[in-house]
Length: 136
Image (cartoon, rainbow, N blue to C red):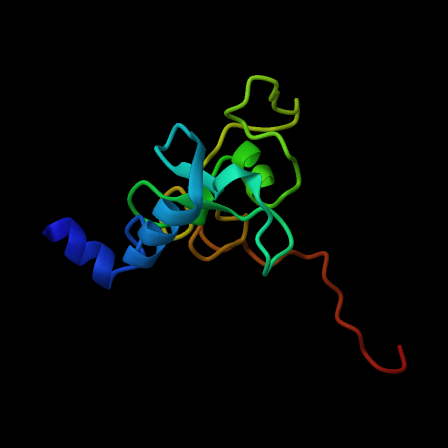
């Protein structure tokens, strides 16, 4: 009952009832990733009449956070590549890094030099700045 109510009233936890029904009716599982997200496409690889392409979507494991989608799956979702990472002939590019979630708002967030929230504090004003004066 709790699962039903969560799916009925929230959209940020996995899937809604509408997504569950659409997936049950029109979707086929393509694969899963290390985070437990499940990837789908239209059954039989048929093109969606409204879009003109094969519809692809993800059902998140837990909170719906787009940064949990690894690069290989993101390319597949965006139709950049036709080969899903779950297929045997998929090889990641040499420049692809392991997935890292979005750290904004956490202690591990990126804080550049000179930021007021960086551990070293705000950088002191340097002497390399010369203000412009008219007629000089």
